[in-house]
Length: 190
Length: 441
Image 1: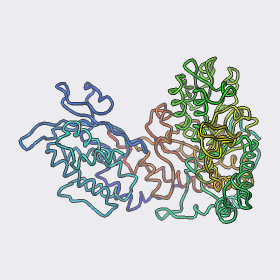
Image 2 (image 1 turned 90 degrees about the horizontal axis):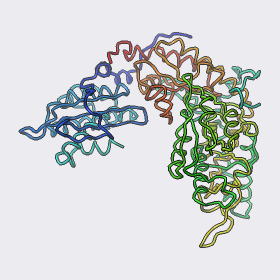
Image 3 (image 1 turned 60 degrees about the vertical axis):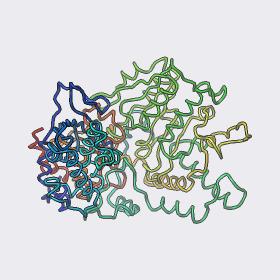
Image 4 (image 1 turned 135 degrees about the vertical axis):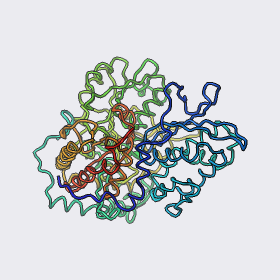
């Protein structure tokens, strides 16, 4: 077998798989669902006194990406606040890294603020390379701008966000109805 | 030359030499294109095959010269269209050692398998008269399939069991990916009415012992339904020797167009089977109250058939026979051995299924430690190499081997050793690119 020097991928590929993404995929933030908590059944578990979180289970059957995500919502002065996000799953580096970066961005924020970030991320994903993302809003998530040039990977990057939107909808349907998070929940789920 | 006993045929035919391979590749215009700046290395024929010029020309010529209603008119063009349609049927049937009257045109193998399942279902609901009694199944009966099936040869049987109350039983595979014949002998018994299995696994690439399974099934009076999607395109298949009662295959996997497939069935079985889709063309007499059916194969061909596509598939059969199916199989076996040898040399790569090229076709599915298949596929695509990633419409067998998804490389008659080497070379650096050796999770 001939071993050639490998250029390790084209510019587009390196743009897709930036170091930040590969680092997050190897060691994702927010990862791990405690063993002693009950599983989420068919996908969505309602909040109870025993477990004050809602869970969503999302699958991308095309490529085998899968995520189980739990969102804990608390009531705050300015409305409901996303107190914590935990998740577990298996999937490509884009899906794992995206869920990881998402956790950094959303935990501790009001649902309105979460919705604003989600909207900006989704717009970047569907921009076909035209929108490089506003770093003030998306912070590290701008690293995913390269994904929008690969339509088959958009669903991977959206998987964690879809799960989050779905879990939040279970928790606070009135707060989410007709918001961008609701749109994500419905449209990205397809 | 049959491939029904020990596996893919061991022949003395020489693999295609360099000159012939160059000639063959020149017949496939799509292979000349570049992807991401690299020559396309199309290593995904198990998903769908590329088409030679003669197939494209045959489809075009049909539309340009003979297109008209088939079985529907007395005018000259209609006669020519009908002759083309029936001529294609005979030609395609001959490719698998059958007679035209026993070959039903379908859209693809999935539809063919559903046709059998729904025929049985309709018989069980009382349709088809006395002749269909042999197909009636109910809560005391069992349907047997395997854990390596493509969803097309699993889900329709799940649904049939649900509709009729029959029980679905599963034959497992060994850790090597071979069908467990001892388990099959234990599962197939007096209650078994149907045994459905793949001739070749689209994930493991392994050739199943159809004759041995058919003997078990026939000993208890069960019908054998074989999914030939990954056998008919890749090595000689002869239904008179296979042992199957029904055989399904798809044209697009054997150099033919999309939208055409075939269901072969033994004559007396097709005669007794109630139709699946009903409507025009498959009837004899229709009143407002009811209808009588045409004889097979027309009974199972409701509505306007994809005649242009059938003509294209017939041309594909001509092309494959001109190359020679033993040569196609031998060439593929050589490339498969090259793939397997090369993968064994790459650290972190685990092949699903047998490591022996003689037991399999050119489809090789594998896992790369620390790198998800979707990323592997992206990394290969960046170098112009096309493979498939995911569960390949076979989730249960992936679960059996402890993975959610895999990467699958598949070779066919138009692939070269150089393409295989490019694939191996690129794959060798994928773990380093993704830092897989430093994974903490």
